[in-house]
Length: 357
Image (cartoon, rainbow, N blue to C red):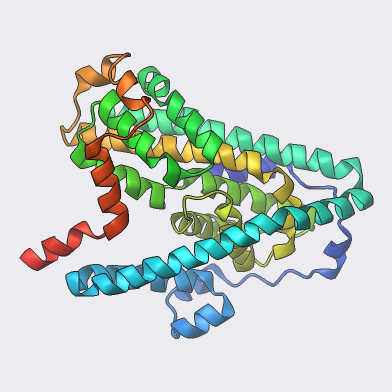
């Protein structure tokens, strides 16, 4: 995330553009950093929702989640209701995303008519910086973390994750890739199913590092296009909001852009600026999904190794489980785990523990 912002600043992506609407847009003055953190705790959650104070809303949502977990089984009905609301909202987002290409075409046509090839070059710079940031994060940062905390072979990990990341690239969905990721870490890497069945779905829900990198890069790009200077306070806010927004991002195609609007609103950038990157976001969505699932698998391997829940001999065997993983079906154990996680929710397994205590 920090490297993405750093690369965006160094290369100055989006600078030199002369977007006509930029003259009409006045960025809101940034509040002091102390106020940003103190305002995270809402005095009125309903007011925060009405005003779009996303940090306060996320804080309230986390507090609700913790409270539901502490209540235990009696709150299961509320969890089911929230999951149903989530499904309805995601369906609404899907409808909007299906209509989005028509709006994107109109926006890009207007922008191209006004800016010509300058827009294409700026978009290419944005794509290059984002792809470079994603590659650096996965191949450098994540692999160093994997080696330091587990001692496992990086080369073996990358070889065994190749097909999973191709699948993630083609679907642009972390959730759709969960069964393949589960089978890869258990059958090919030797991770015990008791670890993998928790970390993989949990990671697909909150470990959206590729999405966070995109949000940071896009913020720098749009700020430069509109000629808005971001200070240290704004950069820290972008980092905080990108991480929190990526945690709340659903693992389905295109939703990262919806969360990006939250980041823009928090730092005072025009929401309509997202339209300038919509045209190239599909391919970038595929790339960041591949990074997301790679990070899920790396963390799973680290946790399993630290808990002695990994068969290292299977991990080091280049041919272990290759046929079991990609034979076109889901085995009964993983299918049962997959169904349990999504029928009861990530927190569902805690209900019985709460009752027993």
